Length: 272
Image (cartoon, rainbow, N blue to C red):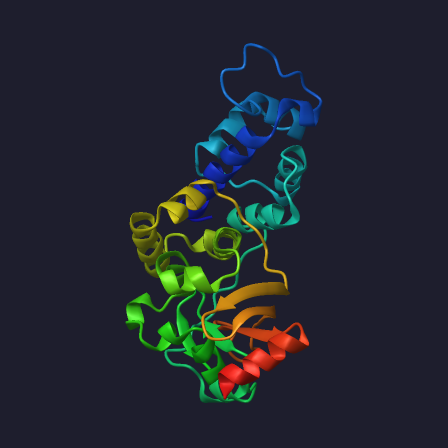
């Protein structure tokens, strides 16, 4: 477990502990509680570990919790499935395999996106840099082609580009969803220079990102409907899909397909 992963695990467990009400685990609230949530000794007791050991874990010390212990802490803190997966990866009990990110967009994947016609599609790296897109996506978000390469990052444009803020149907919910999914993906790699640079810049540029990042919230990606408000064609309801190519696992393809006939007609209008 790297130093950055230990620190993130410590901060994450502390944030979940402080969010869990004593009543949720059958403990009295007590009038003498000076801080919200559970105490460290209560988490330790409920999870069946020593108070000292759990304190060391929240302090980010160089200890290596087993999967059994992480599972016990996940049950005690009532973590969601995404949160449990996150602490397993941070603790090294479900290690993330290192994958190589291509230096350039592979031609066959660009051809695949182009073949999708009016369905917008783009490709991102493990740090969410946008490295390729089709014509339909450029029509949905024209600014992607005009951005400097260093700013062509999905999380950056979501939190800093006013055009994207207007494009997303519910920016507050959508931006928070992107942030929590990003953190879940990069948590074990928070020391990577590309991730450090992006997070530092966003904390400086966006109060909303800064607040969301401090929460330590994480979530997993799910294919579902997304709403857009396009200045040329109006409201769109699109299904959001994410795919990892078997021969380029360092990239993810994001594809939007029409969820209704009127949205399909509007995508065709944009493509024309």
